Structures are given as structure tokens and as C-alpha cells.
Length: 476
Image (cartoon, rainbow, N blue to C red):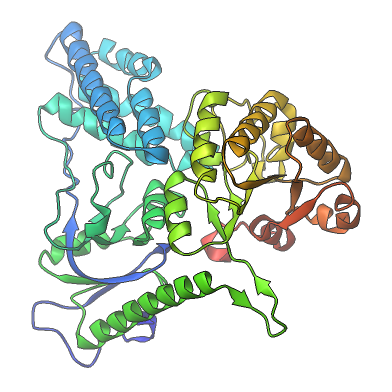
């Protein structure tokens, strides 16, 4: 571990190149060492002075800039697939949302410039997202990215882009938006370090899905990169440490960790393919957790015996309307197809709390994590559940996968019984529930009598038992 090293080790680097050690929040495990690229964050400053142009001219500047940004985001969405595609489509919709233009128009009418107007208009939306907390709060950076792109368009300059790297490189930035990473060559990125962001931010999602080491919420990393433009950077995403100008001791430590990680991954793949066998010759199958079509590639490559948890939330997030029966059937078919004659356990929509959906109305709850979420949400919107079960059943029939379905956040035996009955209506014979509420633990004997299987949801069950938010760094 790098944390066991002193701030300045006995063997100092060359004069003028002091070691700089910073700490952030690990977002995707791994380790790396190499050159870095700092994404330029020099965005034009909004002119706070009264405009010397007419209201009509300023409005035209803003309208045309917003249109160009929306078109660019749409084009980027067209070059991507899966979750990133959906996020970019949503960003394009946010950029061209009439509500933002209307908010900005009020400032222009007051004699302000287009640049000042877009800054103030987006501030309103950022405050609303921040107040919502959880997943929505981390979308504040997406709105900020849209604002910055509009500011660049108004100023007539190019928005800073991530270049094509000639050699594997550590990417450093204040934060990264979906648009920033649309054309990212992930095979050339050693690690990602951002000053902002959180464990569920887009940066974290992209890094984890591509197996890239990542650290977020690392204060001072941009300043350190500016101060050491040609430095080598060591990144330990298991401890959250970033080291600029590492000396030989630090380099040896990080290189040793990199080799151990490679060996562990290789060992994991070998064991997965051979299977785990107990001392009394019982074969223990190894199942993968997936949430996107891209995840199936890694699962199959690792020799997974099937899927133990297929999350479906990513199909719903960042959409203004629910995915259609046809859309869901097509995606589920893609997800099931690689697992011929293998078990795939798919979880129905787990909406609410930190996974709000624009097309589902949620009351303003003081504590969403203890409110309407999971099965509680879907039970109030039965049409969503029925459409999803119908799509799952259709995809199961179109493939050779052995599909089991389960519901999240079940508390009572009656809920489990109703879910199993509904699943059976669509020909889904294996239906179960997740045990992730303490009450369900005490009622497990009754719950297991009315469903075919249960799955222990350790993440939520753990945080409810310990009264500790799993996203809280101080309680980690």
C-alpha cells in the first residue's frame, strides 16, 4: 500500500520535482503508473456587465449556441451505444429544454448578455438537482458541462476535448461528463482521477464498466497537475492515493501492486472456468453481476456459469418516458443470448431513492431511502411491472437462457405472493424476491413458502441494519 510510505521517502526525486501525494475516493479498483493528461478547464467567463447589444441579438446568440450544443450531443450519442447513448440523448434534451431558454430569456430581457443568462439559468436547475440529493445531485456536473459548452459556442471557441493518446495515459480532470468520454479510447487510459464527482458519478460508471482504475473527489489534483506538467503519476485506486513525481520506492510499490492485480485477475478467470469444487466434490457455480449488454462480454470471457443478478435500472435511467415493450424485449434478448442453457436471474425495476425516474412521480420524501422504492414503487405503477415482465418473458422464449425473475425491496409475504402470481401470468415459472429489508429477514420462513427462491441483498440490508448510508465516506 502506498499509504504506508512517508510523505517524502528517503530517496528524494531530483531537485525541483518534489513528490506530491493526494488522496481521493476510490471509484474503480486498480493501480497504474505513467504520464498524465490534464483536461483543459479554461472556459470563457460570463460577462456580468450590461449588454451593449440588443435583446434580439443576445437572444439569437443564445438560441444558436444552444442549438449547436444540442446537435453536437446528439451526434455524440449517435456514436455510442447502451447506457452512454441514453445519457447523451438525455443531455441533448436537457440542453434544448425550453425551460432553460425561458429562464435565460428573463435575464436577457433585463439587459444581460447571453453568457451571463445561461450561467444564471443553469444555476437554477443545478440548485434543484442538488436539493434532490442522491443520483440527481450527481447530475449537476452534466448541467455544468452543458453550460460550459454553450459558453464556448457563444464565445466562438472550441470546447476542450480529450485527444487521442499515443501511449497509455492517466487522465486527470476537474470532472468528466458523458459528452467528454463519448469518444474516449479506453484501452489507452491507464487511470482516471477527478477533483469532483462521486462513487455513482458518470466517471465512476465508465471506469468500472471498462476496468479502468479511478479515483474521484480528489481535491488539489488539478493544481498538482498544473504545477508538474511533465510528471509521472502513480495511482492506487484501492487506497485512493495519487502520487506525482514518485520516487523509486513508490514506483516499486505501485508496480508490485499492478502485477498482483494482473495475477489475481488471471487467477480469477482460471478458477471461474475450472469451477469451484468443495472437499466433498460439490461443484459451486460462479455467476456474474451485469447491468449492460457490454457486461456480458466480460462475464462470458471470465467463464461465468450464468448471471446471478441482472440489474435493469440502466434501461430506465435518464429517460423522460418508460422504455417500450419492444425496446425492453430487444435489450433483454441481447442480454440473455450469450447464456445458452445457463441461469440468468433478472431483477425487476428498482426505482426510487437514489434511482429516481423522470416518468414516475415521487412524493418529496424527507428520507427517500426509507420511503417508496423498489417493489413499493413498482406496485404503485403496475403497468410498468407488467410491461417489464411481458418483455422478459418474450426475450426468454426467444433465447435458450434459463430465466428466473425476482423483485427488489420485498417486506411482506403477501408482496412476494403477489409478485410470483403476476410473473406466472406471463409464463415466468421461476420467481423470487430479494431479502434486503430487516423485516423480511424475520419473515423469511413465510416468504420462502410463497416464492421459488430468495436472494440476499447485502448492500441495502447492511446499511439498514447498521443505520449507515453506504455512500457515506465517513461511515465507510
